[in-house]
Image (cartoon, rainbow, N blue to C red; front, side):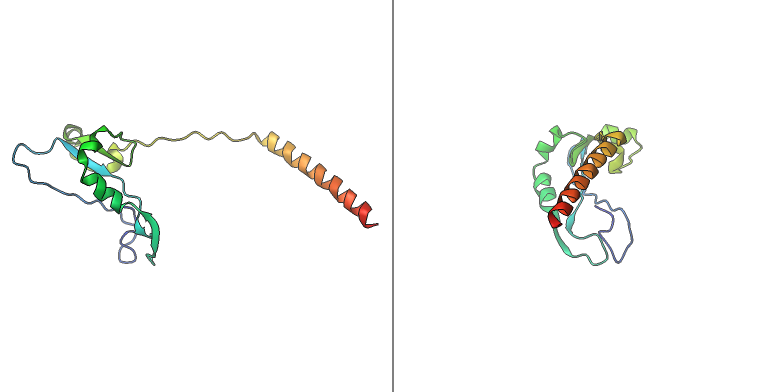
Length: 136
């Protein structure tokens, strides 16, 4: 759950919900993770209703866990094999398993920006001179 879900009663506390299901034959092969970003309320002290809400998606995905096995660890929800969790000493932090993809940003060179500003400034100066001659 996102930090701030329990404001104003608790500060910026990260929260996870664990759901255990009793099995009759050997236990769990995969653990399902969902990276909840919004619960339908603002994350400030006022907790006003907002449009962003992951809860309906969480419920829908939970009821269709079979489809979750094909999702990547970069998606909002995904499965992790219990053996991998065992290798990580049973650490259930989503950040241990979720892969973050960083998008490279390319910025315009400062010299290009300066040239564009100079061109705009020259155009502005020319238009200002035209306006002055029209007002005389």
